[in-house]
Length: 199
Image 1 (cartoon, rainbow, N blue to C red):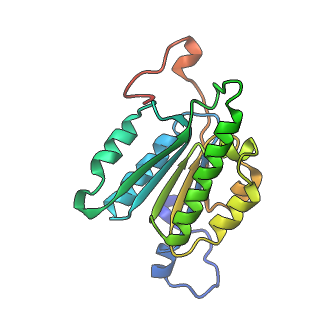
Image 2 (cartoon, rainbow, N blue to C red; image 1 turned 90 degrees about the vertical axis):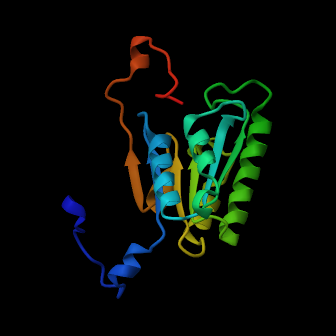
């Protein structure tokens, strides 16, 4: 798709303006770094367009502070555009502590229930469901319910979902799917994550 030119235009009677206003479901998946970073970049664009933004972070601790959270929270209300940030996790997805799985599952289910309420109410114009592929993968949230809810969301609410191992049904339902691949990573050489790069 060089220079943003589409390869085919469906014969559905939509105007160019209508095509520019269709809701988008995006999925950022794959083993590489940058899935959430790209989603938060989209959230900045949404905020700049004056769209209310809702960020829902799954499987990340309330204690874990990331730079994007600080930046987007600072923009909350600026120019009248709200940004709301929710965390539904107890800790990193790859550090599941024995005996806490039920709590994680319950928090993920409640997070998804809140998203469904917000979608039905049209609370936000742009949603970031950060690391939401994991609750689906682990069976904490029903994939069929997610796909059906997102397909039937009212209005032009845009949604971006991040995380590895996106379910094939989610990929099929999405309008935009990007797979982040890893060529090299500093951690492969024993280096640690650092502020300003990883968070």
